[in-house]
Amino acid sequence: MRPEIGLDVEKLQLLLSFKAQGARLVEASVDDHRGLVAAVKQVDVVVSAMSGVHFRAHKLLLQLKLVEAIKEAGNVKRFLPSEFGMNPARMGHALEPGRVSFDEKMEIRKAIEEANIPHTYISANCFAAYFVPNLCQMRTLLPPKEEVHVYGDGNVKAIFMDEDDVAAYTIRCIDDPRALNKTIYLRPEENILSQNELIAKWEKLSGKVLEKIPIPSEEFLASIKGTDLANQVGIGHYYHLFYEGCLTNFDIGDNWEEEASLLYPEIQYIRMDEYMKRYL
Image 1 (cartoon, rainbow, N blue to C red):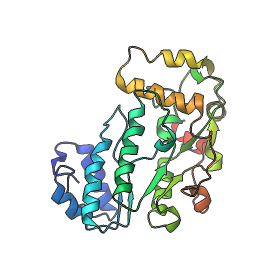
Image 2: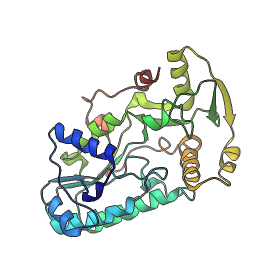
Image 3: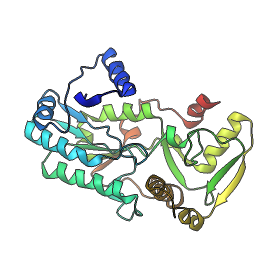
C-alpha cells in the first residue's frame, strides 16, 4: 500500500478487506525505489493490477519502475504485469488514439524481457462487468431498458470473463512451469459469444424484447469526432472487438501461448447468463 493513500477511503477499505482475509500489507510506492526494492524482496511473485483504462487512471508506464525494482531485487520467480485485456502483441494495427494502451504494454514487455525477468502475460479479454449487463453498450454499466445498439450484424464473437474467474486462472498460473514466459489466453468455450447471443440471453432472462438498432462500422468510427479522449479510446477498442473480432480471429498455436481453460479444466467458470442474473 502507498503511504500517500490520503483520503481514498474506498481503496483503504479494499486493502483492509485483503488484510482481513490473511494478506500482509507492505508499505511501498513506485516513487520510492529503495522502498519498492525492499517490498519486492519479501515476495516470490509480483502481480500488477494497475489500471490501464483512460476513464479512470491510465498510468501503465509506472510499471517500468516496478520492473527496475524487480531487476535489482533479483529474487522474483514470476512477474505478471498489468495486461488482462487484448494481447498487445496482436494489436500492432490498432487505431489511434487507443493504440497507446497496447504500445505501452509492449514497452513494458520489452523491459521485462531485456531484464530476463521470469514472466507470464494474461490475456483476459472482456471483463464482464464492463460488457455483459450493458449488452456491450458504451458509457453505461446497466442493462438497456428499451433499445440496444448492435455493432454491425452483431455476429462477431468476443470473449467475456467473470472477474473472479480471471483471478482464479491468474493465481493458477503464477507458479505453473507451463505458463512460464508465455501468454495465457482466457478462452472458456461457453463464454465465447457474439453480441447477438448476449442480447438473446438477456431477453430470455428478463422476458423483455429490446429494439435492435444496427450501427454500420463507418457510422461507428465517425462518432469519434469531437468527443473526449476516453471516448475516442473506447470507440477504437470497441471497433477492434465487435467489428474486427480481434479476440477470436486467430488460433492459439505457437510455443509461447496457452489457453487457460485447457490448462486448468477443474475451474468451474461462470457462464454469462448466470452472471446476468445479478442484474435482474
